[in-house]
Image (tube, rainbow, N blue to C red; front, side, top):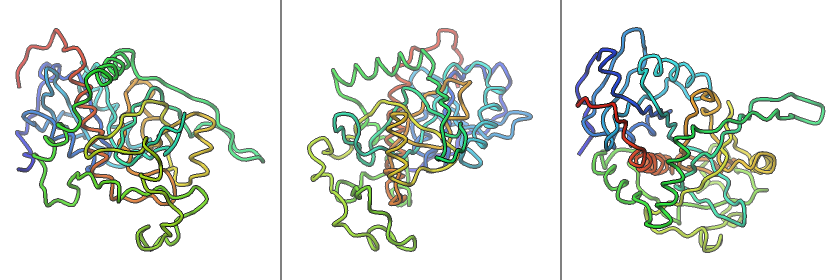
Length: 326
């Protein structure tokens, strides 16, 4: 089965009022698993708005989705501004996609590729000044809305009591995507996940880690201990500060320095532009924010983030004033 583009519509302002949740997926690889979660996809165009929206339902909520023309802080701000101007009844905004993770943090918690990080707050990493001793950060922090944090904590409690629905949601995503596509979201398993030592940098930019780096300078999940163990399609959800800047974090020394200063457990490039919208950031971990960054885990990590976002939306109370059917 493959995704359908759906109908194309130019809805009026009153018709657009049914949409209460906005979902931004920065890249196509992050957009496709999100679209697979919508019931009855519709393509929406709005006058004087260059964004092209995909819309549908998730549970009792009408959701409008968009991807970006380019990644980074500048690209996302104009897209979000236009989205809120066109859909004036939006109550919640989710930013869902890929991130680089901290492999080990408080009490030796282990983060592995394919895991999910949900923002408790966002630290803007581009604010500060350059001094003779290096860059000094000026702390700029924002938090998701109270309503989204309540939903996150409710879902977190549900997971502790009943487990999560991520495995089943991943299966549903796969049923709607082309199995032969390059970005099909398979769990690559523990053999494809190696954490290189912090003092060992990528050997040759022209070669992959598999062909150019010394596996003896890395750890498998098994050697990282029981907290790094995952059954197939059972990513762990981590909660904590996410760092956002206009450049990628691809050095283990920088990664660890930022964690020490801000306690950031994940890094990405868009959320810092969305402070005024109080969005929730959900990131699937596709690399360890080091020089060994590669793209092979991106399809699966994008799907795990989308699966969590789907479950979160199902947790949110349905808006009482939306009665219109698509």
